[in-house]
Length: 155
Image (cartoon, rainbow, N blue to C red; front, top):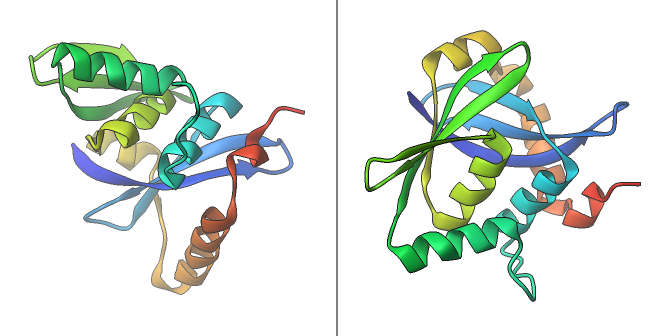
């Protein structure tokens, strides 16, 4: 397993499909995962520090974990089959729960938990970004700094 950072979310055109982009911490590979609009908003909220007036689903789950003392220690992106990604939530108690990566990432951002990706997933879908393309990655980062959760509303 290799640790990854969440670069952010964006809408892929022309399909108008949100993606979350992960970046290998100790490497040069990026993993794009297509996600739903609700999860894109949840991830964007967490990254921007938006606190809703009432807990959304991922906030509720974070609060339940805190109230029960069952700490989320790690999110593992474990595999991809036919374009569908799979993840596990790993708890301090040793329990593991299968979950969608989008929900797992949204929860990890709220709890400060580490996110790791299986080497096999990185090998299969990871996109290496050569140094000469770093400008494009920087433009994407600038886009992420300016995107708002409203950009992911369904139309």
